[in-house]
Length: 114
Image (cartoon, rainbow, N blue to C red; front, side, top):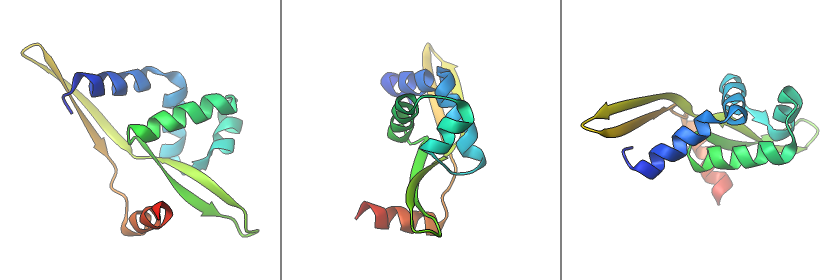
């Protein structure tokens, strides 16, 4: 990723303490927005704005969780593995490594998009 706008977007979201908290929490286990709200005492609008942005940048993905009582909840999980920034000849180059999702996750995502 070497586009300046993409670089700025990733740098901006990683500079945000709320987004970093969400990434940390969802890298351990998938969480619903309400669970993140409770864990970090953030407002729901703050959580949802950050989650939307993290999803747009492919740093977080979603999947449906079905509880035994039949309730459904969208849960979020971090896909960010690492970020590398290089500076060469006056230009920044950003490399974002994402975790591989397994076949079941890819099939679930495909099914949800239908």
